[in-house]
Length: 113
Image (cartoon, rainbow, N blue to C red):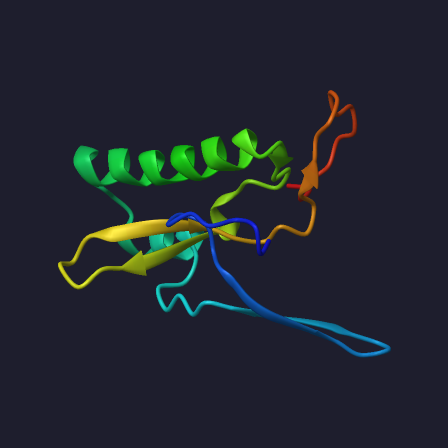
């Protein structure tokens, strides 16, 4: 995660480890996740929707150029950050299932629906 430096990917600031736990300190995003944002706002105009898709696409493209596969893409793993001008930016988070893909991946994973 330290090697990922992209405006649409959550930043890992520090990590700590004890004998029992691993702690990750990440940047604070106050807007909540995209699932809750969609539930609250219900509708989005086309330009706002296009910008959200663009943010997610750029994050995935960046990861794929580093041979990283997220493997758990869903609205709950997309954080909404409100900018000062009122626009929102999407940040990809939760890399618990992510892996470096050196060959085709044949495992099925993700959150059951």
